[in-house]
Amino acid sequence: MTMTKEERVLRVINGEDVDYLPSQITFSDRTRDKEISEALGLGGADELEGYLENHICITLSYHDKPLFFRNDREEMARLKELGFCGPHWDAKRVYDAWGMGIEVGSDGFFACFHPLQKKAGPEVAQFMPPDVNTDCLYQDVEEAVANYNAPDITRDRIFEEMISDNEEKSGDFLVMPSGYFGIYERAYALMGFQEYMMNMTLKPKAVHELLEKITEYKIEYAKKVVEMGFKVAHHGDDLGTQVGTFFSQENFEEFVLPYIKRAWQPYNDAGIPIIMHSCGCLTDFIPDLLEIGLKVLEPVQPCMNLPYIKKEYGKDLVFWGGIATQDKLPFGTPEEVKEMARETIRILGKDGGHIIGPSQEIMNDVPIENVKALVETIVEERQTVLGR
Image (cartoon, rainbow, N blue to C red; front, side, top):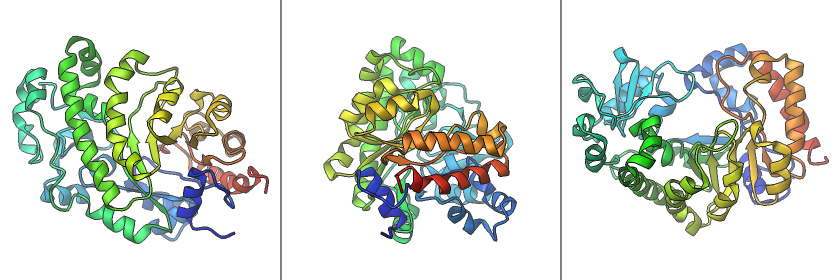
């Protein structure tokens, strides 16, 4: 049977037969597509998605685009004119519509400025996008949170690229609306990670107030995703380290779970499968997340004990990722990469339920030869693992 890429992913999510398992490889720096394409011997960057056998197109609102395209000065200048970001090139930052500073030049997301931390100098306010209440930059955390507002989700043009991607790329790809930097992540990015963790105990009222404001935004975002006709939903909150979760079960149930549940309600009401991004070992939280609607976990990482989670949750959960990016992919030989990728695909892909991919975005330290080895192994294994 012949399937579109969109159909293949949706059938995996729904537990239906497919001709072969879908896959997805994403690079951490979106401005490197041309360079990577040339290194792979391709005719241009437009051929990269096909070479990588990618099945999913991640689409972004203008509130989220600075996270991914912080290194693209031309695009950041365009978004600045539209009022969705504030580039501060001398400080190597781009401020997004939330007031969070994103480090320019970093290989991956790095929040380098936290607007509710009361550490802004007088020069910062001039670079803030118009939705940011700059009074918050100079106030103690409780007052700053009280006066803070999430970006205006009703502004014109926020979703124009999401709408066009969904219309033009659906079928060729499963178009997924980005939900990275979800609720708890966004809260600590605004407050500062250490401050957020301390304030759960010292100033829980301020933490809950901030989470409430972010969640209300996310609920409205979810309604827009449903209204625009997307076939899947996405949410991102890193809940784990390499050895366990960031939170106790008690703190998870107070400061995380109820807010995510509310943000997911529009998706559940519409019957849209939910994909969640979370790095690290969050195995302890899987039952709770399944209960509130989780369908796909992305990106599964080896620290979660892949054979265990496949056996324990493989009937209820689709695993996206799993191929280790922290040792063999950047530092191993191509043959070692192939062996590692083959083993992972055979564990997670047995009887389906797997979107093949690395356990994280591919960073700049991964040799092109190892990227080639990974793609070759995916093509070799994606049917075999299904017994075909």
